[in-house]
Length: 235
Image 1 (tube, rainbow, N blue to C red):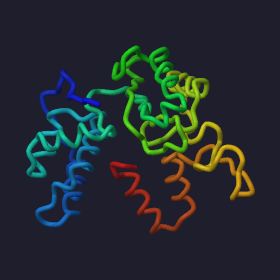
Image 2 (cartoon, rainbow, N blue to C red; image 1 turned 30 degrees about the vertical axis):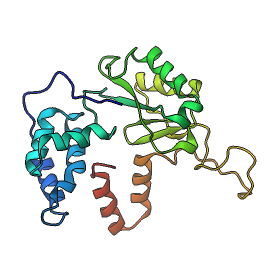
Image 3 (cartoon, rainbow, N blue to C red; image 1 turned 90 degrees about the vertical axis):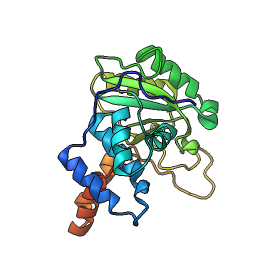
């Protein structure tokens, strides 16, 4: 799937003082001569700051890591976690469209996006709040079809359950992440053979819920660790 930088680019990019200090600290995590390995966390922090990855942001990251800008662009364009155009301020929906999800009905999810958000992907709708795109495999094939919104997965979808999620987002409500059929993990929906009891869990895929609940339950050392992870680019 070909991905390009947005045609409209800002004049420049600059990390905030806090993010610049964070970026410099990240670079120190890698051995001498290997600081290019920090390209993904730095790109993600730039995206967290601006909402997307612009050409000036790529150039700033490239300069910090002594890389050619095209090498940084290769990373940013390969991973769908990086948005190369502005996205919705409230939610950007990424619909997995590869084989397992397609066989399980992802075309219906895309149809809902076109009906309720915009006819074409990467068009920001509803007063700048919502956007969508089709992406390559999100790595949860056993729970297909699914979408990713921010850091959360919404799994075991059908057109009806996904339409409700989109409606909630448009209305300003935050839908509950995870399996939309209350499946705990990736166990069979029916005909359990190994597990004798079916477990249901409505919120097990929420990154925010996991971190918040873990902070409450664990000691101060774990709390400090989780807070730093919550601040990390892939949290």
